[in-house]
Length: 570
Ligand code: ADP
Image (cartoon, rainbow, N blue to C red; front, side):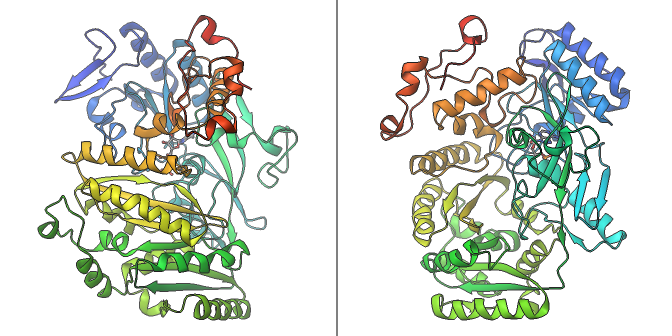
């Protein structure tokens, strides 16, 4: 392996063909070279690289920021190797950025928050460790993909369903779950349906969560709570450890299912649609996630972007949307949910939904499922709701020129709330010259308002960045938190949260990872997270203080001296 050391300073470590990789911040050339040598001893020559050509995929996503170059990639093949790599990194203060299947598209993919991290690519650890047919669960390593697990279930004729996310058969249950991703069957809240983790801690120790804490445990992946505190949540949407094993519950294949596919033709119908869905979702009568997608979301995957009509700076005209939608069995709003059970139960439930729709949503058209599945969009939706990974959502990326960033705030499940959200979002998209391309995904009590900021790369990057920032702030100002953001906005979003919450996240980071070697800045969590100024000021951040809107915490803590003392936040 050829290692090109940096000339000097922290920034540029290697340069080739105009591409740059970076050494970790604060790490000198000698230490970095030593780390690379030690990593190579642990995982083998072929599984370490500092070559810019090999680092390209780890430096890019389709989001609106320039590449963030790592310093190296290391690909361990076992938990023991992960532990050894982590111990070396901890000793030499080398930041590691874990990635499992690496398809975190439009949220950052395999990009770190900061340049210079060593990407810990866990893709080689791709064993399905167990599938228990009778208790309907699987245990997977980080590199297992949805497509791989799907094939395994089919090959072994196991009557169990997965819950794939919309975007990628190549994504995986472990990576998606630790990011608290969602799917579309009744098992759509992935973290809720996960059970039992194995985690390599920043000092290299191995933690088994939940029931797994008992040596020889016979219930690790079937009883979530174990004994004592429930720790699993700490290792989701955070940077406190590296998850190397996860139990996921699988849905027993039902004897029958019935997709409910409906369209509505007016923008204002969103209020009635969400109010119609709320009782069905809260009661769990309609157990799948129910997607209510705007026509443009489906069209962006199937139709050509009409640049001649927009000049690339104006929203796509409504007439065009209506015409294109009509040709594809789409309405302005497109509703997809699914019922499961025995044949008579499914028939009975379908009749109940039909009667309620006739009463509460008379403007809706109920589609014939077989006919609708001729359209790629509806077919994709049915696949998603019946455990079959499907690719079609990828094609949206070429709609406007290769760029996408997801904006994904969470909203109470009321029609008026959805309307209010559209009123906040659309003018901001339009002001920046982008289209509103969104969907409301009804879960049991909330709706995820997922919007795609499709833009041209790289020309529209600054505009897209400004748009994303304005959307994030507008939603936070109105009390709606994103459930997930892309790496470029993790710090920004965390700074919108209550200072006590920020401080506690920082305290946990300092306790588990004092040298900040795991994914620095992930979800805005840093050992140096700005802390409130002293106890008295912290108390003042109660309701009275918050009433005036979010407040930025004052940066006081430093990495040494007083700043390293245990936090005082209450
Ligand atoms: P997917 O391919 O399913 O989208 P990724 O492998 O891209 O999943 O992971 C999504 C994100 O989750 C990554 O950006 C990373 O920050 C985090 N992550 C991935 N794998 C791990 C892991 N094993 N331990 C901790 N965090 C992880």
